[in-house]
Image 1: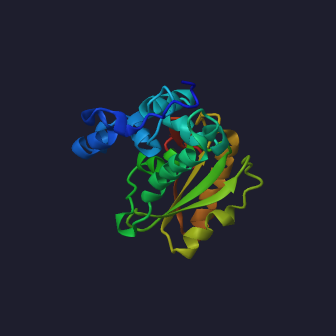
Image 2 (image 1 turned 90 degrees about the vertical axis):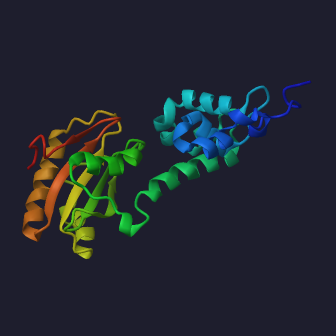
Length: 233
């Protein structure tokens, strides 16, 4: 029998106690590995490789969830056993996970520390291949109101319109803002340009009576609070 004519391996081919879906129903999603969770989305493996093995290979090839999230649609769909349909399912699940964090207003997260703020954006910002500058607007109770994606591309303090950073905060009558931008290199060390921009934004915030709580630099698996470093504040 040729590889082309051999059947694909499905979740239903597992012993009942080993099937990811049944394990999720019995033990909860947190009990499953990343590969098992991905396998539930993909449902079918390829000839000679069950769907969990396909998922493990996918994670290995892209260096874990971080790399898988960062990979382009074309890169993932080009992997043997994937294709457009499976890739769309996987990318949609990743995006839904991100959107869920901000969907329900009454469940808006409260920010008490730089780490709280970083956790709201790290998941997505770590996966960006270009530098982005986002503004988190915060109400008087330190609850997140919105995340405005302002700039994309190489950031230069002389090119950033400071007033634009406060537009969303003014429209929402926000009490304060937090800046966050990523370093695609993975190194979150602030640059001199980052400090210059921060000083300009802090000064503008004082004129507008909108406090700038922090400016976070997001790297891979780490972040820097410029306020804690006293850079620009």
